[in-house]
Length: 413
Image (cartoon, rainbow, N blue to C red; front, side, top):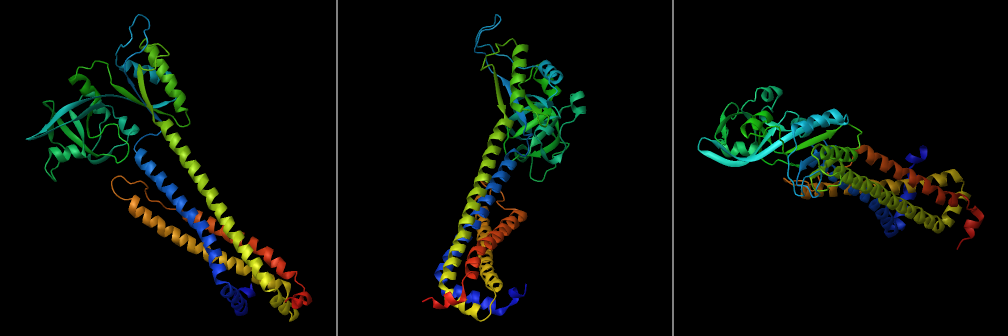
């Protein structure tokens, strides 16, 4: 390791670089561009992934949403165009028949006038079970969400969105325990939730116990739609098909009827996006590593040219007693030095560009990329790989330098 601290070695490396300034700068830029591209692309991919998690973060991602529409095929005495609603019996049958189902949330919704004092507004009112909070997590600002006791006692309690709270209450007014009217019926406010910045099927909504909704709106055992979450590892696409087939059987709908039930399979949509992200990350690594290798080969080429130009100098050093090992070490050290400088500059510039991207596209209520960063271990792996490649590529010109015979080198013109 003495050669690392030998001033003569570094002077010779400095002299070699100074003689070929333009060539050296171009070579460094080639390697710099490779790791810069890798850092920026990986950071952008991470930003997209973070944004994706932010959008779908409040949802159980292996979920499917099902509702009824109208039939398009006559079946068992029923005419085409028949309309119907799902029932609580459907929910019971699905729970019993499909062990793959982890959570099932039946829901009913309507628009209603909400009034508090002299303030009012028209909002969506949803009758729900407490299980909704597991399928679509609510970020509560005040109070709590619905519980089983609310369901059993058919309590007139309500959980409202932050925007509803702001519209119906004065600033800094405590909402918990106060009453608002939902279609002229008093409901006690037990919670206020913050609307998610991500995907939402409800918007600004007031949640009341399903049993209370059922009683007030005379729904009987009818529901409007349901949210189903599968257990880990379950094929959510197949589960959706099986559930729809069972529901068609329960409601005497033709098995091939495509319009009777509507559905959105969140798991399938997320899988598409996840596949896109995986493909993008693979492409990023491929392009980045290929560019790195190209840059490292450029260093090898410049060192081969340098060795050729310094043939006479190497011959003189050999004649004066320099060993092949010392010459080999100097050439390899020059390769590693150039690679290291290029790598560090590439990482610094890449981080700077990601900072700019975050400032432009990662801020505000609807960011495109959220926190576009690269993990330190990945940076270290990329940098170490670069150094290893720089060392390996330096072996070629180093070997060419050591096979130069002193007497032949001194004859070079």
